[in-house]
Image (cartoon, rainbow, N blue to C red):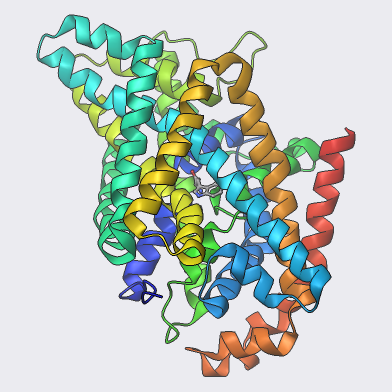
Length: 449
Ligand code: TRP
C-alpha cells in the first residue's frame, strides 16, 4: 500500500481544515439564520452550542481519524469490540460516505452559481451583453455548465493529493478569502443603511433565544459549519502528524470557523440593509428576511447593480470569495469517498478521484435538471436528518465503544500532559453523555414536531 498523505505543518492542516469548515454555510447560512432568529441572541446560542456540542464532536472525529490512519469505514470498524459493533461501524461509515456525496452534489450546484456570478460582471464590463444576461438568468444550460465546472475544479484539486492538492490550495485560498472578506466589510460599512443591518445583527432579542426552533437551527448550523458527522474531519484528522496536539488544533479550527461566521455576518446583514436603503426588496412575502438561495443570487446582485462602476468590482470580489469558500469545502467532501476507494480497492488516486467525481457530477446534474423536485429534499435529508444522526453515532463510538485508555493514548501523542488539562477533565464526559443526549433531543424534536 502506498504511504498515506500527511499535512506538512500545523499551518497547513489549519488552513485545510478551516477551509473545509468555512464555506457557504458560514458566509450565507450563518448570517441569515442569525438575522431571522433574534440577531445576537442567535449568536450567543450558537456559541454555546459550538463550544458545548459541536467542538467535542469535532474532536471525536479528529481523534478517531488520527488513531486509525485510515478512511471512515475502516476507522470505525477498527474501534469495534465485536461483530455487532463492527457491523455498526461499517454502516455508519458507509452512510457517511453516501451522505457526504449527496451533500457535495447539491453544494456543487450552488458553487456553480457562485462561479457563474463571478464571471458575470467581467462579461458585462467587456460589453458582452448576451453573455451577461445568460449568466444572470437561472437557466438550465448555465446551471449545468457551471455545476460541471465546479465539480471539475474539485476533482482536479483532489487528484493532486493531500499536500499538493488539499494543503496547497488551502494555504493559498484561505488567507485570500480572509482579506477579500475584510475589504468588503470595510467598504459596505461606509454605505447608507449599513448601521441598521449592524443593529439587527448585534442587538440581541432574548425573547427568541430559548425558542426550540432557534436551538434546532443553531445546532444544525453548527454541525454543518464544522463539517461534522460524515467523516470529513475524520479523514482530515488521519492526515495530521502524530507530533501534533489534537486538542490544540481542534479548538483552533472551531475558533477560526466561528470567527469567520461572525465576520460574514458583519458583511451580509449590513449589505442587506444597504440594499434595502437603495430600494431592493429584502423581505419575503411573509415579512421574513430573505434567506437561502434568494439572498445571494437575488438581493446581493441587485445591491451591486445600484453601486454603478464600483458595483462590478465589488461583485467580482464577492463572488470570487464565495467560490473560494465553496471550493475549499467541496474538496473536503470529495476526499471522503476517494480515501475509502483508494485505501480499500487499491485503485490509484487519479482514477479513483475521476471515477467518483464523475459519478457525483452525474448525481448533481440530475438534481439540477429536476431542481424543483429534488433540491430541497436532498438538502433536508442530508443536513437535517442524516448528519446529526451520524454525528450521534460518532460520539457513541468514542464515548462508549472505544476504550477510554485508547482515546487517551492517542491524545497524548504530541501532547504529553493532556491528562492534566481541563480538556481531558470535561471532554470524555461530554462525548459520552452530553453530546448523544443533546443530539437525540434535537432529533426527536425534528421528527415529532
Ligand atoms: N462546512 C462547510 C460549510 O460551512 C460545508 C462542508 C464541508 C460540509 N464538508 C462538509 C458539510 C461535510 C457537511 C459535511 O459550508
